[in-house]
Length: 358
Image (cartoon, rainbow, N blue to C red; front, side, top):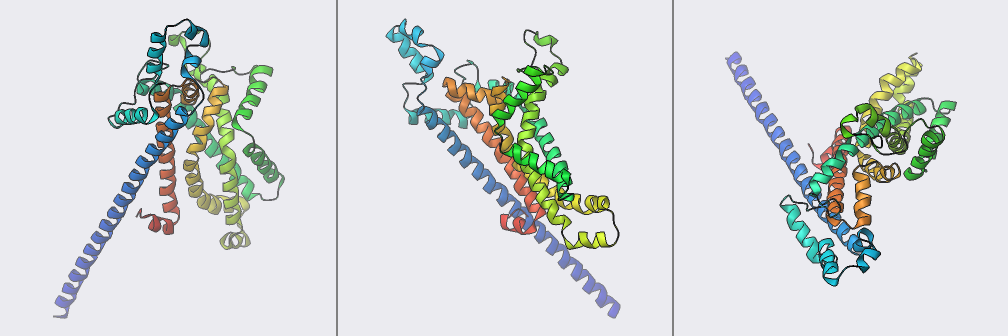
């Protein structure tokens, strides 16, 4: 009798545990769905606000697209009808609200318009420029993260030593150096004075497209990639160093040192484990910094990427192309911040619960 009762109680308890686990997973799925819905709504509002701000700032710009792209001398030799046609083409006579509404209708249907400078669809121009920028910025992003993590860990683990002072001083110096100045400095030293690397562009001048190989592209990308890496490294380095200092001064590290563990073993076993995930969240949050720096760096090195196309579109009054690049850049930055939020939730359960992720 008792055996039968114990078996029935076990069955009831296992059934309760099953439904409790099922309810827990359902709650987590609902929280995750709510989190994604909130982030999706924020992304739409962000893209709407960024595109509207960019459009109206361009409309307030004193740059005249006709004089910039056609020239005053050429305009003087044209008839009023030709000038009116050009003004209509460049949208100079269209009210800002009407122009933005027309662009927004096209964007919602998947058509970002036609580039006024390249006379091609904006998506086609962006795809071509993105091929050059994507792997350059991705390589710089990875190098800045790996370098910042390694040097920050070393500086934090060796607090007060000569290595710590040199690494921290270099990081502080780089953090206060503008990206365009660093690009000009690298260009002057390695290209002009030493002649080790090409001055700019992404391929050798005068070489046919079928003759351009991977080696040529890599050589031309060394200086821009190095500049972007050095510009994005200090923030991660200093943050990792600070986190490493906290870990090395904690009670469990002091206990491990008192137990006789070597410095290397403590740094690897305890330091890297506690610093790796926060460093990864900082790395994803630095996407916006890398993209912002690429605009100036590509302009200095005449690198035909998305950043240089943005500057050309802004100076030339190519509103459709500028808006397309702005929306794409804002989406990439948002995705990087989203990954950082998710990783922060993994690191700190309090933030995960507050954000409604899990």
